[in-house]
Amino acid sequence: MKLTFRPKSGLIILIQYIILSTLFCNVKAICEGIDKDLKEFCVGLDKIKFNKWDPDLRGAKGELASNRPELRCANLSCFCPAVNGKKDGSVNGCILPNGKQLGKCIRQEFRMLTDEQREAYFKTIKEMKANKDFDMIALLHLQAWEEGGAHRGPQFLVFHREMLKVFELAMREASYKILQSTDVCLPYWDSTMDGSLPTPKDSYFFTADFIGSTNATGQVIDGPFSPWETLMNTEYIKRDVGKHGSCYKEEYIKWQMNQTKIENIIAYTSISDPGKCPTRVYSGNPELAHGGPHTFIGGNMGYITESANDPVFYNHHCFVDYLFEQWRKANQNYSQRPVQYPVDNPACETDVHYRNEKMTQFPVICFI
Image (cartoon, rainbow, N blue to C red; front, side, top):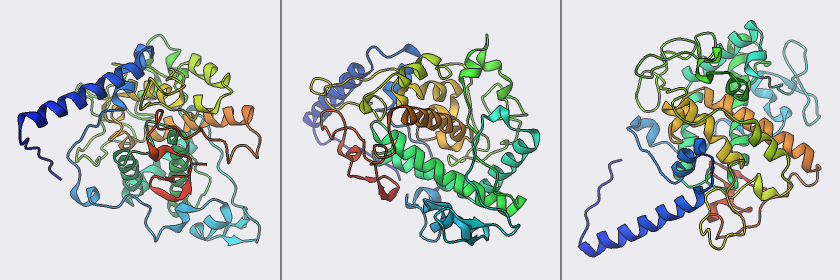
């Protein structure tokens, strides 16, 4: 879709200038005091970068297809038919054709996978790319941004948790098809490990054995995801590893684990009225802290609208979700987890982040 703007008068231009100036001042106020490695991401939360998109995908609806009910499942019994299993009548009961019980996924740090597990993971992601599930989920992420949810507020963690669940269910379906295995799970990328190196960009993680290396123009030229056609009609993923940003910092993790207020974790990160909102933005807020590795990887990962085109997006967000779960275990009991959510406050967030709003792209689920 091509957007055009034809001002009718100098007054309109003046009004637009005043509005944009005010918004930019708000962004600057919100991002004041944020660590320098996160400022680019913080300011970028209120900017949108558009690229040329595939016209067929661009016109698609953002919700999951009605003929994919297995990707909406909340338990293993529901998912069971997708892997030709037989339900045993319990909530998570599913007997696979080989006689084994379908179990929950166990997520490991990427570098803890055996060579065989890593190869199975790569084959599964390639199958998802071939069957278009990978692109479908990347499109969900883009459209969630464009519609105002999933980022810039409390929706961030809960939306991405649901998105990871959908991605992992699609993975298990794909791995069953090509490998007759349901044990291929999403590994997380703990970038604090790379950040502890003298030169993080030289980590072995950014080689052909893991997620691939780049040429002088930033194209990923080897590894399991090269070539890799993106939704922006490019043949290769782009990265600019280590030029900006930082890996996830231990200090952010320590800060998060010390928080007892829900609004510092499921956080207001793009405050509508800094003068009236009773809280502020902190570098350790999960949404902001996770921006450092996005910027560190750079290229497609450096832009929210493009980031889900790079498979490392899911490994990074899997680590963010791991930290969220550690915080929940330390600070919430089972009865609190489904209901605790920040107070709706128009000075702190837009209404798409309110607790009773339907989750963007997953409309059958509320944020609480």
